Image (cartoon, rainbow, N blue to C red; front, side):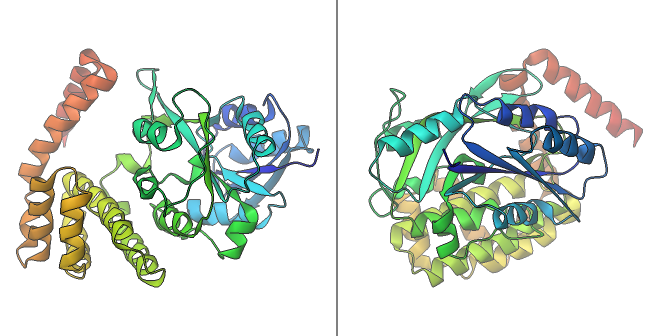
Length: 372
């Protein structure tokens, strides 16, 4: 059979995890797919691993090496070289479920639909506790796609099911019809973190047919160090241009009221999270950018969001109102934020890794502070 699917794998300095990722792609229960690995200017042993696998499995793996362009740029390079009807993405420190390709082929074979987007349900692998835990929106996913039984025949779109916008934005959890991406001239933002956000809303708005694989899609590795979401540094500032791109898409595509509510949900969620963890060095610049964004959001959109989409009205209303005033810089009370963040982080750490690990971590951080 002609391959139906290409899996694009951007790789940057992942010599520790890359082989495990690629092994999951060449040991699928059905080998009806292609793989494009894009080495995005790695400086470690990533290149040698890529060449080894592409030489050993030339029928499956195409290897491309380029100067560093970031995750969005590496994905775009891979996308340009796709010649199969469908494409998906996999980060090089994660790995694919062994039945992924077979389940995808079965869905396409058994349906009369021609889906633009196919969702999958990832699972989280905690590198510290060695536990596999559910993806955070699993309940929404099961409800939308009726996936509890391991079978889903639901065919929908964002107009019929606006709750699709509640699903986490990760680009790797979706399979895309290549013709659909080309027709909408889709590319990822380059040179910015959080590049999944604008495209998630744009493509969901444009898609006529959305389906799902109810089984596990891929395993997302956390707590291995160096992850974007773990830091409070300069990358947080990338949220500002990403939010502006998202609002431009909302306006150009004439999103309806409920869609704008879900856009605001993502902006508020990311903003509150970032303000709580961003380092002192960058918090003022982050708040300046967020203030500029929130003063331009209409009061009608905010009121609709608070009434119909928001899950914690009191705290989110206060946060939004503060950002819209000239006193927004008061949110930079780093000492107070640091206390609140430390308590929340400790609780989550105990839940995820256990009490002993959390105590060791706190002690290690205390010693580091004393030595500064």
